[in-house]
Image (cartoon, rainbow, N blue to C red):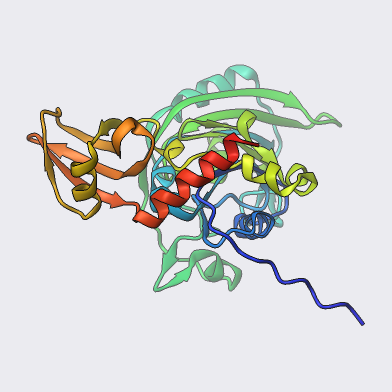
Length: 321
């Protein structure tokens, strides 16, 4: 008989942990594992990565969950491999091969096609996606053999580099690096590139190397986290305001900080700004976000006094490790 599992004592954790998501894990499974390792009370991720994909997955804890939407909207960079000559039911290596064609592709062909998919383009979301129709994810319809009409979306591919590479036995693949806007499906991009080359293709590997200013070199692996002490794990958590690096900074004095935290607008000689990170005296405590219009600081998302104090104590604890 198995011994009862020890109950984990949860604690408030505030900040962002950059995980290098392992292959085969869903984003939610990875989140729950890290949440358990940190003994965190509240957590959320910033958009899913397919189980097939690895790479940068920012995980938000406590007060940082209030700003996780910023990463959903962020530009991203991916490294991918496309298997030429085969189309699959899902657009990636997890699906069944539904069509095979001969491959006669040169680097010149690939360079020509890359130009067609660089810039602002329209892309139809795949059936195997988490987009919902009548409250149900599209992938559930796909698994049931039901095709749902999808509206094409405008996306932007800021940079696209592709190179032909051999994969053994005279087969060819494409190594691809794409920097793109939110809402881009790399599986669909791979399929569309394959069609433009006339041979079809599917995604055989995918790695996210950057998102919203975070790079894969900053990430920690799940295996490394498991091997750490409790203090070492906590030290991997970046402060909440790491999500606000591109925000304009406004610092308030004690009286105005208190009023701002109560949701009141403040007036000052600040220039107009859409994205503002607001701090208390000395810029030591993040209070929340706002925007400035006509000299008025208008609160958007606020940290509670408990979150402000807990974040401060956590930073002091980490700095002492």
